[in-house]
Length: 62
Image (cartoon, rainbow, N blue to C red; front, side, top):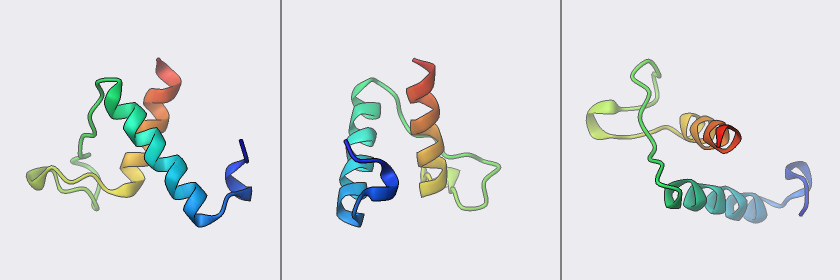
C-alpha cells in the first residue's frame, strides 16, 4: 500500500471511505463533538476533522 503522501486525491478518498466503512461495520458510529464549532449535534452532523479523529482513534484502541 502507498503511503498517504504518495496517494492521488482519488486514492486518498477511497482509502478514507474504506476506513469509514470498516469503522461502521465494526459496530462503531460517528458522534458529533458538542465542543467542536464545526460539528452540529442537533442535526447529528460530524465534521470531517472529527470524523478522521474518531476513526483513527478507534482504529488504534481495538
